[in-house]
Image (tube, rainbow, N blue to C red; front, side, top):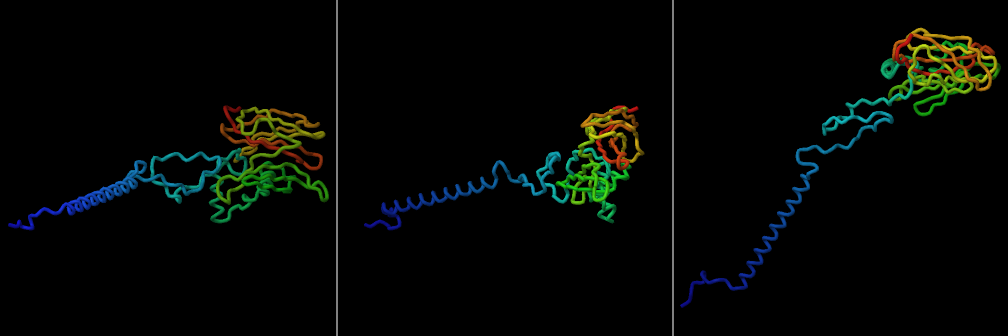
Length: 293
């Protein structure tokens, strides 16, 4: 009697083939699961979890030299570059003339851009000459002898005619650009002294009245005049007739003045009388500190 073929167990060879297929299928499933896990891990790493904003790479201009670094805001979202104003470099000098500070310089820039107001502020030579003649009152000095510009600073030599074909040098005026942009104006900040110097009080130092003013001079039969000025006010003080001379000889004199605390002062010393009224001068910049008489 023969059994029903549908109930007959498969041969051993077919059983082995079935096991192999099942093993291969399980291995493929395991491999697919591993690949999926790797992809998910890379797209959600602990340093950048889903939903967080990565630290943006800065695309703006570098911080100008000398400017303080910008403080953190606590936000990971970058600020649009167009919304960030250009930072003015820290001004390393005493602003003496014609502007009291960066706000005044920026106001002139707006006027210049809209209507071409006072373009001489962009000329280091004209700025130095107007400072000499109009602010200090040395009208005998009427020539720009030389202008040397290095980056945002300039040295302008001013002088006068000392005879046919000869220009005499009165001072080398130090200027620096005040503010930002290609149209930042020139500001007088001091002088480069040689045979007539003004070294006391120190540049940028706080002073009170009376202040001792001094330096060194090389010359014969000189008579020094010291004056103190501040922007927007008449001359604060002047001391004349200080005898001096010799070879690199020290000179000094006390000068009394009255000005509010914090006022920036221009102290100037001049000598002349041989060829013209003022033949040499030097300046320094200081600030009023403490009480003044």
